[in-house]
Image 1 (cartoon, one colour):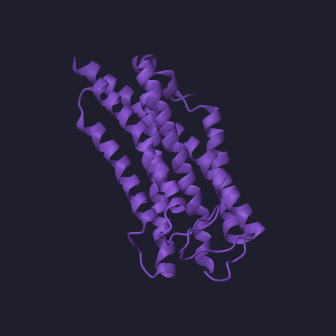
Image 2 (cartoon, helix red, strand yellow):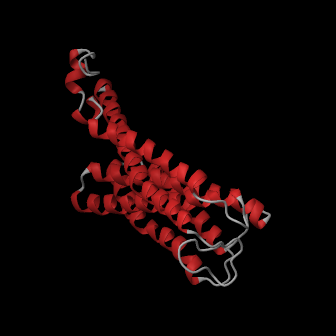
Image 3 (cartoon, one colour):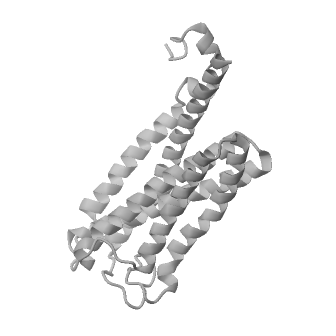
Length: 252
């Protein structure tokens, strides 16, 4: 018996379709995502050989690079949601934009933290104000400010409109973070895909198994991980909005 059927009649009648039951497709996607992530980790930790110079710490790059790819896709979803909300004024697009920011911010933090873990044995420091690291930190702060902006505006329509514009413009911080190690010769951050800058510290030559592990993880974290997390976050937001509407109705 479904969760809705177990509710009192009045609550069941008021429950919207998208919160009444979990879609089968979402359940299957979640299972596939978990399995895919496990396969990606197996390729990174077992299939890919140990890098000759850096040793085992180099394996963190398979998640470090892949998580940034996933963050980029999630932030692109925010841009799409923002544009469509400004055109249609439909709340579901604002919900997509919000979900994209929260998922992208989570994946961006994974990228930043794994980079710091790698930097400690390779650069002998947890942090340095290298152009790439600085731009990544600015990107995180930019999207953190998006959430602060939403929480600081009480009027729902004004909040969604300002957040949409902000989310569209904030993608520039992601593009700069991606491009900066390719246009700044003074960065010491290596470029895993493509030629490295003039003075990289920690660059390494990739073998075919390494490329396969990186490619597999990048695909998984760019497709399955952001899609699954965004879908779950949208459902959570829809449920929260429904509860808020019920509370407002009871207080009337």
